[in-house]
Image (tube, rainbow, N blue to C red; front, side):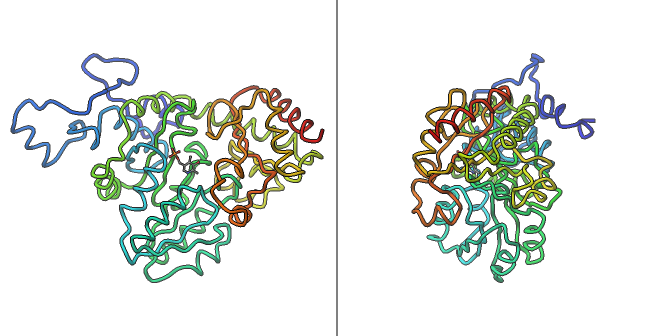
Length: 394
Ligand SMILES: *Cc1c(COP(=O)(O)O)cnc(C)c1O
């Protein structure tokens, strides 16, 4: 029955485990351990635990499991494992299946911390090749006999370049490699990653899934053999599990995920259309605009332009700062996917540690501002952005 439910129904009901009290809301099992009725039960549980048998919260917890079942149902994977943050999830998804001598191909337009994890792996003898992920020939050309994984953000942070999930999946699979996709910007609502061939899909749940900017979290989605095999072993022994308290926050966030993300994407489209061509801007980047270089791919792959817009102000950093400082509704911060709209200046904050050349390579200019659209009234957001653009010109 639950298999036939549509996304919004699953987001509210899927995965729920009710205790003997029949509580309506998802219960918060804030416990690290579990009492065994006998020594024999304890012994047995360490041999094999059933779906409702737990040992220790680092291994699993009923509230965390509810969250894992719900996200797996939405994403369309057999299983999922919840982690302490998006980075804990990405680190686990890569590290649990790589060893010295293996080779990874990754798109260079990527979140700085992901590049850091790849550097750590290189230190342990993993070979890494960074390429321009939007060019399929570069994936093909970088293949080696020892290539184990291809890894990229399906929509890059903050440049909003869209990478062809199916195209890379076909190349990876033909070479016997697996595909790991960081799908944060697409969100589970606009994700078709499974049907496009991604093997492992990773989210920072800190973003759209929480949706209220409250708690850190991450999740790895994939087939059961991988999730309950190498991935679970890695996380449970290295300590990157999600707190049950955070899983409980994510469960509550998920109930409104579809409503929020669709409203955010509508606002993003409205703002992008309203500002494109504004004289204060040298570029408006939004995958939902026909002017976006991968517009057709974005629409085929996500069915939406997503919730993020990147603006490039004429006049560089000065104009970008004038724009940011004039905003009244949109907050200056660095989270994304929040119900509240957020504007970020990547060159001086999230991507400050890169050199100017490295930033240029991934198209982060001094005038670039990344805006994560919230669920506020779309006309109010357009007015706020226009206020900023007018200030930038003045
Ligand atoms: C935020 C983010 C991460 C890291 O997630 P945390 O929850 O902050 O650890 C990874 N990838 C992308 C694309 C992100 O936006």
